[in-house]
Structure formats: structure tokens, C-alpha cells
Length: 148
Ligand code: SF4
Ligand code: SF4
Image (cartoon, rainbow, N blue to C red; front, side, top):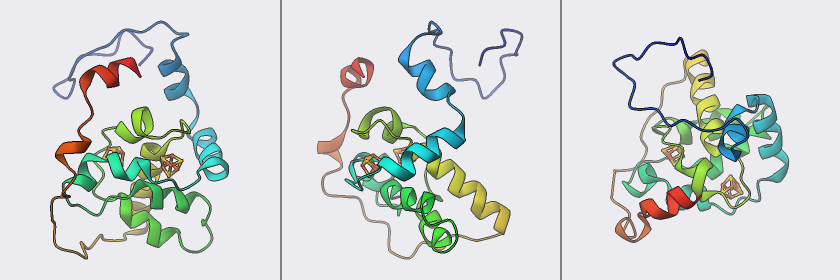
């Protein structure tokens, strides 16, 4: 937020005040169009975003690296990749920590969820929910998050 007159609401978790030139402000302040364009050309499908995703590790079918494919397959195929975003909780770990290319998989998931809603596509969980065996080993230490 930039408007200091905005009220605190019941959904407000807290505020972190950063200078305008902070890299995080620059990254999050870019228009979505730019974020998607960069992702479309630079994502190398390494899948780190998925491997660290807390929802994926809990066993849900959230796979942001596959959602990134929807940026390039807008004419056909996006409906399929979009579904891997439906159970994303928008925590932002993939965008702010996991992606080595500093891309925006969380924002790609946000867009995919919006597209699915607009088209009335209903998500169906295809596999039983099973916790990933590496879940505990892939927890991100708070210090690393702050360092990032
Ligand atoms: S971590 Fe980044 S580069 Fe790797 S698949 Fe995800 S979005 Fe693409
Ligand atoms: S923003 Fe979504 S896809 Fe990214 S790590 Fe969080 S839950 Fe997973």
C-alpha cells in the first residue's frame, strides 16, 4: 500500500514499512503484465517453486512451475495448467524465495485462479492428498527468508 489513509481492517495481519527504493518494493510494484511477460520468456522450468511450495509439500496438487506454462499457452492449454494453481494460498514463498530467476510464479497462480473463476472452471482434486516425504526437510528457516 502507498496510501497512508487506508484503514486497518480485520484482515490486516501487520505492516512492514520499507523505503521506496527497497528491492522488494520494486519487485512487487511492477505491473502484472510485466511480471507475466518476464516469466513467459525466462522460466526454465527448474521447478524449485513447486519443490518449496508449502501446499505442494502438504500433498495438494499445487505446481507453480506448471502454472508458469500457462503464460506461454494462452491460446490452447492454459485451462489445463491453470488448474495447478487452484489450491495455492498465495503465500508468496515461490516468488520471494524459491525462484532462482526472481520470477513471479505466485502472481502467475493468482492470474490462473482469476481465469478459472471467470470461465467458471471447477477444480477437481485428481489424486489423494498425501504429505510429501521431504516436507520437514524443506521448511525454510526464518533467517533465510529475512536475508532474502
Ligand atoms: S522456480 Fe522460477 S524458473 Fe524455476 S520453474 Fe519456477 S518460476 Fe520457473
Ligand atoms: S504462493 Fe502458492 S504456489 Fe507459491 S509457494 Fe505459496 S502456495 Fe505455493
